[in-house]
Amino acid sequence: MKFSNNFFLYLCFFICFSTYAQVVWFEDFETYSIGTGYVGSLSPTLALPSGDYPAEVNKWFIDTAYANLTANSDWLSVQEDELGNQVFEIRDSDGEFYWSSEVIDISNYLDIVLSVSISENSVLESTDYINIYYKLNGADEVLFETNGSNADDFTNAQVLQDSIVGNSIQVIIRAKNNAGTEQIRFDNVSVIEKSLLITEITANSENYPGFIELKNCSNHTIDFDTTAYYLSVQTDGVQWNDLKLAGSLCSGCIRFYAHNSTNFTSTYGFQPTLINSIIDGDGNDAYFIYFNGDHSTGTLVDAYGVLNENETNSLWSYENSRVIRNPEILVASPLWFFNQWSISLSSLYSSTPGALENELRYYNEIWHPYSNHPNLNYNDQAVVVQSGLFSAMQSFSCENLTILKQASLLINPDQVVQVNGNLVVE
Image (cartoon, rainbow, N blue to C red; front, top):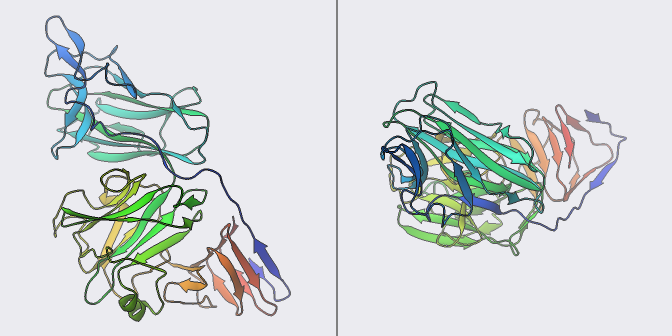
């Protein structure tokens, strides 16, 4: 659409919410003894509770009515995977296994995302499967939208259900396999209110200053002074540094942290608002976001890299490179997945500090990246007014125009704003 030079536009929105993003419910099976669940018995053929189940388990329960555990090498229980992580494992169930979380209260939350990490080992057949469902407000089971149904060899996947609003939720998992060499696993069952997401990282080197970019993907402001979030860096898979985030970040908004102000300014042409020396990753240092505590006390929300791994040639290595989150990823993940990221050699004009890809973004009274003001040559880029009042003193064009809740746009007389795609006012 086009605004003519006789059109005067002034928009200002300020919305505050009383609740903030957080992990609502989480199960990673790390607190239970190995074997917690059910194990089979040969004579008589019987599924027997084992480990800490059920006496020490109150967050979930198992139904073995349709499973057929015929030997003590058949189980539905907490086990260790090849990396030493505790997971829930189905081995030779010969019938459908059923796992359910407790009923989880979500009445005080605004934008719930359900997530389950699943994996398998050995060779599965088409009759082997793991399906993930949810029950909202006690209604019928509904299959997760993303990777809810998985049969045969699926290797690993993150199962997601977005945009849940209601009073209560349950996560239901149904799975089956039929051989002792087959293991189907699930882990990190999460009920999370949308929050922070790592969107871009550059390696810190002699040529380019390192920075990390974060986005608030929730539908409400995150107040870091009342809700504790930490940005944590693990150097060489061993040493930790933690930064407690401060201030607030509005819905859909971006902030970034640079390693060094002087180097950053000389490279990109504007000063970073936030700097911290821990932003010093050289390619094999991992970044993590923790909620309600640092790396030793908090809950892991999002990850770039693998915990305790120091591999220069790993899939997630970013030496002399930049990393961006693929734009379709809007939900944080406590596990690193290759298909969520793109890694490329870093250069001055390839990185976009303070803005997403193909985007100009206004906040802190400056345009990001590179202080570029939108003009008539930006037909293929998005323009986002994130916060504050932007007064357009010259005409500009863009692919899409977004004005976020805490932002205002003033188009002065005799100026034209041409939007070739979508106009979004939140």
